[in-house]
Length: 181
View 1 (cartoon, rainbow, N blue to C red):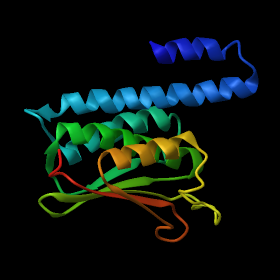
View 2 (cartoon, one colour):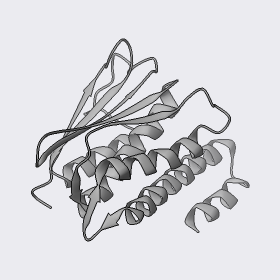
View 3 (cartoon, one colour):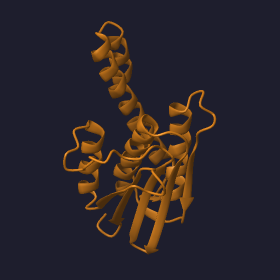
């Protein structure tokens, strides 16, 4: 409903305001998809993280790659069960990272899940894009998306790493523990 109201408002706004409202609508829709997907795979307070991210990425791919059939999102990695309360912020983080990859990068996106031990996990998002600008810094991040990501990583008591990835690609990784939840 909120996304619909903002869409209607954008039709009468200036071009700059309409662009900002469109960004807000896309973010609200992505968060809604993340929340809905989490509840579809919730089983007694636990969620299969890989299945959750596969479902979420399928919906995001359909939404974000309209007409761009050459691009896709792949989820790779181990299956692991995590508390549903941890799945919510992780779904939002991954949605934001994928949205940024589509906005600033080109080509394919890979989401990798690693579980080196039963309670230690990492998720990375890598794209085929031109990479991050040389001046990119998490501390200087002015974009709302990166601020949301950082707040959610802090909420799960995780760590966010930013790397150039293979070649020039952007590579973001979140490490976290599931014992706290």
